[in-house]
Image 1 (cartoon, rainbow, N blue to C red):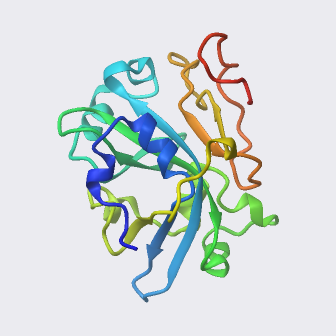
Image 2 (cartoon, rainbow, N blue to C red):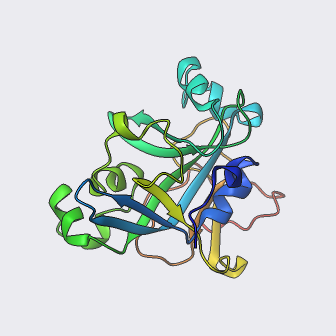
Image 3 (cartoon, rainbow, N blue to C red):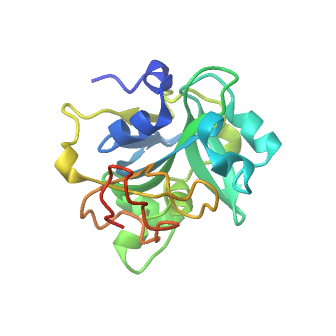
Length: 210
């Protein structure tokens, strides 16, 4: 099956984040070795309607960096650490999905060399952790296509069922903290242990499962 194409990301990032769950993120090292993991957690950011884009999570220059063609790899820095995201919607619209956690599949030994941990579940259960474990270099990856041979997403044959998806508010945002734009594979031990920014509000149509 071919990797997810850039056109897959030319849509609402909330829809994209949900549909990315269960896909496999694959990094091919220069040696040809593959490091991979199943996407178990993703968050959406959609600046045209997202208060988080103007209230400290982003600044003007960073938002502009997101407004590129859909299906391109991007990084932003949080607390000095790089976080992997992919651009969504059209050119000129700042919109993206953040990959927050993956479940390691191939190349676990190499990942542990990149990021030694005591518990394997701590290897990639956070957005910066997975970047380090996969050995990603933001300078080399930024702006490349999401279907590039070096770093790509392999889709599932069948989508993840709704009953297997948990939806919460996002992590570490102030404004927009009630938006239910974080998606996880329910009960997966490699999802990040972070606490959502706030409990979901009544009336959102989404159960509070933080």
